[in-house]
Amino acid sequence: MDGAELFIDLTETTGATRKTVEANEFQPFDGNQIASLQSQLRLLQDRVKELEEKNSKLSSRLASCCCSERRMNFGDRSRSIEKSKESGTTKKKSVEKTTGYNTRILDHCSKRYIALKVMYFGQRFYGFASEAQMEPTVEVIALYLRSNLKDPPNGENSCHNGEEQHDGEIDYVRVINKVLPNDIRVLGWCSVPVGFSARFSCLRRKYKYFFWGANLNISAMERAGKKFVGEHDFRNFCKMDAANVHNYRRRIMSFDISPCDVRTEGNPLWAFNIEGSAFLWHQVRCMVAVVFMVGQDLEDPDVIDILLDPLRTPRKPQYVMASENSLVLHSCEFEGVKFWCSSDAGEALQLHLSNEIRTYKLQAAIFKEALLSCLPNDGSSSDNRKLKKKNSHVALLSRPTEPSYEERRAKLDSTSTI
Image 1 (tube, one colour):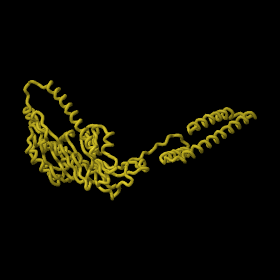
Image 2 (tube, helix red, strand yellow; image 1 turned 90 degrees about the vertical axis):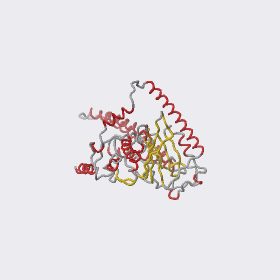
Image 3 (tube, one colour; image 1 turned 30 degrees about the horizontal axis):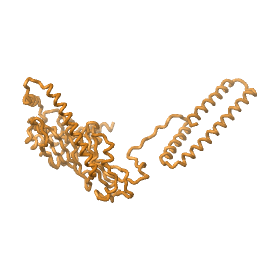
Image 4 (spheres, helix red, strand yellow; image 1 turned 120 degrees about the vertical axis):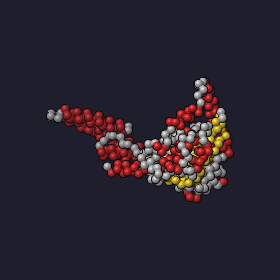
């Protein structure tokens, strides 16, 4: 019988006793009633003693259990029951969950701290990091994993990419990829020091943004993109977070445009290649959006210089960011970290990606067939659509603007003092 049953038995029994007492509250007790009450009292005392003995036996069995996790849970439950008894309440106690990575499950085996290079297609996930962006991307995570080695390299003495860390070790890429969905894949792993941070240890990041180049002025876009290179204030090329970000200066190492080996119906595929030490929230999508306006001959390349000068343009003009679907975080660079993948895992990864390519090409053919069946026969041309868009375009510097950083901070400060 557990604690709940004990509570019910005691309640029912004492309730019956209480009714008897209430019924006779204003009547004198005779000898039979006194004997009945004494009998019920003895029954209750015997029942309580029996339950206490049973509880003591169960406690002894649980205390001798070799599982440390069960002892911990039992101890937490015992403390919760004691608190309930002290407060005289039967309400359930809420259990506070701890956040973070729990390494207790690895206490009885060898483990090592490694970084994983992860590729995923982000339409389903709304972003890998806390910014909640919908971007197909490549990221890195660092965590403890079980190791086959008796003395795996860990801590500051962890050797990067040495042969000894691979021989006899778990093939992390192959094992993890077997249980991942099709749109997530591990590309490689590397042993790293415990102080390694996938976010803050990153030296530079490289983004690619793919786009179809038909009817775009590529040379003008290249001139505009070069203006981003160097260290600038990018507050007009991001989604501003004035509560947490106070420095909007970032360094761009390169911003160029290159053709890809893909073409459909004479429309070539191009890619922006953008590399920097760090980026602001939605910075790449904002930069690309303005460069697209330049490529459509809606804006002059010099508008980049004006927007990069916070004294001339303290308030960001309102414009729509470029779509997230074409944005790829191509690579991240870390000091001393070289990701490794076994030949077996590499072959399996290539086969998987080849199958995915065929699947998407098949889907593209189906959509193309649907397009051909509904094309208009009125002879409308893309030139007419382009002219219409140019006539309706409002120049960036003539648009309504968002609050400046100083205005946002003033609003935050006034709210905090209320």
